[in-house]
Amino acid sequence: MPKSTPKRLGDVLVREGVVTEEQINEALQRRERGEKIGEALIRFGHCTDSQIVDALSDSLGIKRVNLGLIYVDDQVLKLLDEDFVTRSKIMPINISGRRLIVATNDPLDFPTLENVRLKTGMNVEAVIATKNDIDTAIARYYGFSKTLKSLGIEVESKKKEDEKFYEELTKEPEKDSTESPIIGLVNQILLTAVKTEASDIHIDPTDIEFKIRYRIDGVLSTERELPKVILPKLVSRIKVMSHMDITDSRTPQDGRIKTVIEGRPVDLRISTLPTVRGEKVVMRVLDLSRDSKGLDRLGLSEKDRKTFLRMIRRPNGIVLVSGPTGSGKTTSLYACLDQLNSTDVNIITVEDPVEIELEGVNQVNVNPDIDFTFVTALRSILRQDPNIIMIGEIRDVDTAQISVKAALTGHLVLSTIHTNSAVKTIGRLIDMGIDPFLVASSLSGIVAQRLVRRVCNVCAKTEVPTENEKEIFERHGMEIKKVRRAVGCTSCNNKGYKGRVAVFEMLDVNETIVRMISNHEKEYDILEQAKKDGTRVLVEAGLDKVKDGITTVEEILKLGLDME
Image 1 (tube, rainbow, N blue to C red):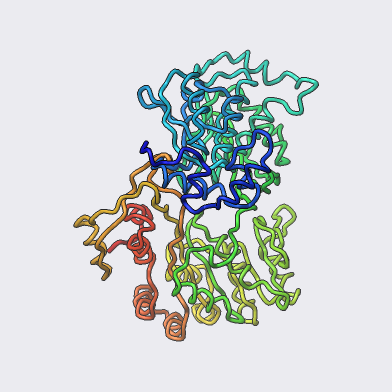
Image 2: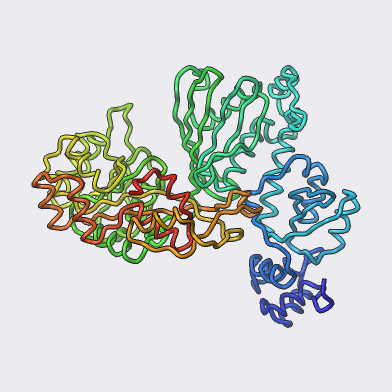
């Protein structure tokens, strides 16, 4: 380390302009016993954790990492115990030869790093992470290990002593214990899902074990493999929480859990499915604390935003959002509702089920068990003097017909539909039995969308495009001079991608399109006219994201879109 490099955290923060000398002195005088200077500065509001980490990374040349998606091997965790890492606010993340890589919030805390070296007998290399990331990683890894030990499971040895496991699981909790081991395991599974921002949790049985998998940024990855003997108890606990029938393991069941995890409200949709190897469970995770409302959160280009606003601000008509399952259609609809929500309009939604509760919006859950379907709900809603109606999905001819009727009688109708593109939605409605004239008269606009992964900003490389990539762009009348490549690092769990962004295709149904639909013209001709009017098809919108360095050509190719 150069001699000119400051040896104290406060010196670095002052030199980098994050805080002043006066603020450092105040924090030193007023900090609590045992509190580090960085923690005191954050508590007094002089700076943020992220600002401290960025300043240290720039000044000291030490790499910053995001621990949210990093996988830490059990062999690494065994080197340091939970009490030590919690007290020292560090997280071991990898072993490279005789080097132990440790994430810390304060790389200038040399006594702690020296303690790590003495405890492990290894050379220590520090990387920087935020305190929140370190706390999350400790809870995710050490918490899981502690929970499994309470079940009598040693993951690293993968013991198959079923009788012992069963005895541990079925015994009553100790008198001073607030929860049984199996409850702790379920809680840890949910905690990890929220911490890693997973959209789904999969519990998949195999012959001798079961896997816990998380879908993160649209990709499934295995988090744990556990002995199958604990699966029945685990499934039973989930069923109890979601008000399912725990005695029925032969038929599929659906349920819901509303809970709070570390102060964050979470909504879980549970689905069980009997398979030949046991019951499979999938839990859709909706973190209600995340701000997913508002059109500005969708990642729309300025042109697409104006088009979208023009569609939904019309006093009547149908605006449809199309795409496959998991493409973010419902998020887009909620963003529209948030945009339109005001005290001078009556908004009513019909959903299966309600995903996010919105203040000022009348939301209705359908219930097929009592014959309260989309159709019956819509008939009642039309007598409630609504201005705007949101329908979770148009999935049958009856729902489509009532939606058209509502649009033609002065209501704005928002809904989703499963089609591959905006123009194909027109044909889908006609195939359902809706007269082309009524389709033309009621449609205001169609939005087709997909989700693609964002290239990781930490490790992405900028390179010259290949000839094949240039050819793809040229076929769509576009030019590309540089592209960003996914590489992989600790920040993105060696995936090369982190987070997702939506790609949109906007079809504004103008007078020309209305006339073409009424005249039964072909989808191809309607598409060509839409392009002349300014519509960018999904593949072109995706290539725009590549050009902007947000994603890669590989991600666009995975969408299975027509690249011709």
